[in-house]
Amino acid sequence: MQSEAGDPAHRSYEDGPERTILRREVLLVLALSLGASAVSSLISFTGSLTEPGGLADQAAQLNTSRAPDRPWLDLAWQLFGIATALVPVALVAHLLTREGAGAPGGGLRTLGLDRLRPGFDLSRGAALAAVVGGTGLAFYLGVRAAGFSLTVVPENLPDVWWKIPVLVLSAVQNSVLEEVIVVGYLLRRLDRLGWSAHAALAASAVLRGTYHLYQGVGGFLGNMAMGVLFVLLYRRWGRVGPLVAAHAFIDVVAFVGYALLAGEVDWLPTA
Image 1 (cartoon, helix red, strand yellow):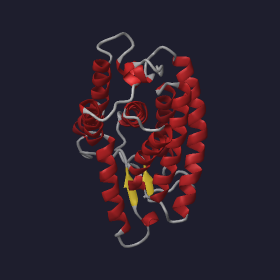
Image 2 (cartoon, rainbow, N blue to C red):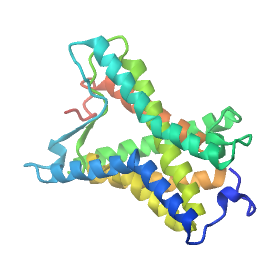
Image 3 (cartoon, rainbow, N blue to C red):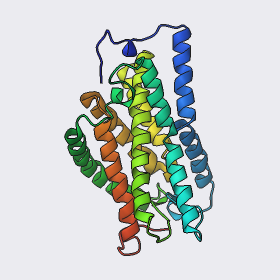
């Protein structure tokens, strides 16, 4: 990620038409993606709080079936959902390409999402996933036992041949969408708008926590802490590649692990 003072992509705008256009762009990208998810999650959490009983007695369902008795139709819906969820990433890639006027290294490569350093991205991502994933699981079990989290059901798909591949694709989609939008893109734009590093970090972390609020207070706090760590590492490495890899590893283990272990071990909460 370039950060030189002379880089026009990182100059801070004064008040004026350019600043207004940039603000609108950020709001529109978020409204089409994780900003809308944050509002939806807040509404969902409000509903959970007003339901009879505690949060731990309720479930947050992920990767659910759209047509349980029609596997081919269900598969079509799953693939459609994964593909359309990545449209905001394509939009960001387009905007970043226009920003560089088609110069080499534009698009998502600007954020460090490319194939230039696969060893670096995968090794850092695997190490980060091991730390964050293990800590996150322990935190989730603790806050759920304390009544501050819903029971998270990572998947509820029928036992068909495409179940595991779809769960892996869903994990990759989540990781690309979140790390590109809420870390790489958002921080780049907030830098150009003149936000301080601390304010941008807080905005990114709070946004990440908010769109996980449907899981309960634990989901909000845990993901906000993850957001702080990911922003700090992005600032250090200048690449979202390791973050995408780490997030994908975490979600693959969560989704596929739940599919294999639910009902087989007594420590894993199920709905």
